Length: 284
Image (cartoon, rainbow, N blue to C red; front, side, top):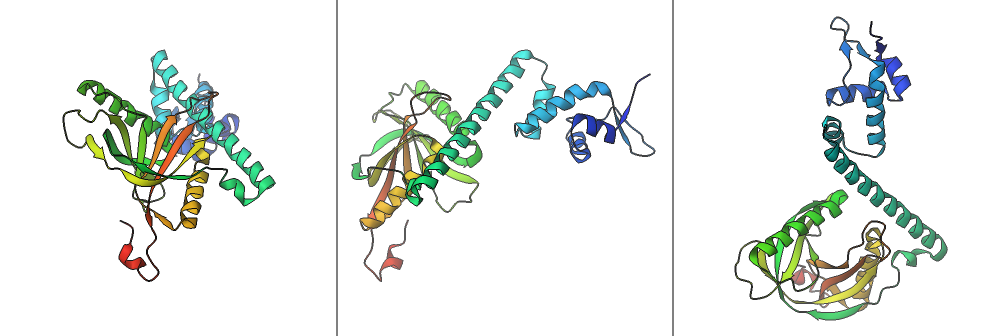
């Protein structure tokens, strides 16, 4: 005869709240073994503790419910390993971000507000035009690495099909600074030979410009310090920013890699208009 546990008993033993158990039932993740139709009471089996433990572990990794459902339904060991590897990469990125946040906090405590901006050498450069394969889309800020990596993979495959010659490192253009806080309007670009035949949305000319430039070394989570330094430098040189800004990835750090991330920031600029004429010179 089977031993059934009430939702309260199962909740206490599995360390999962009754509210969470009801949510997991609705999502098809952890379903009661039996529901009494007369009372609506939910009952679980002791054999479900192992599945409950996996669900709680995955939730502690902040994995979305939809992905947990996919993982639990996997039967192929290879597919399960691939999913776990993806979760491992995400966890490592979270650890690296927390470590970077801690180091920045320690610097702010020791150095004050200047620690936010770091030490950046900034210069004004004329950036030439170039031809590039591009892909523009809205990027969820919480999935920036994954979505941009995939976009560049698509561009590299497109370049191979066209017989393109790569003529420089990958870079991203950041359009529309007034976009909602959860997303960026990003255009991933892969420079190619200027005589590459073809036109269309994926192949276009990136116009040259006059830009304030600096180099960021270190975690991507600290790159806002470089942007802050650029804005302060512009203000001190009677300049205003234009868009899109550009991030050129000279070295994209591998998880756990020894060499730090190297990103060149290029921010197009224009002269500040004389006082009283600001409205006639609104940013494009």
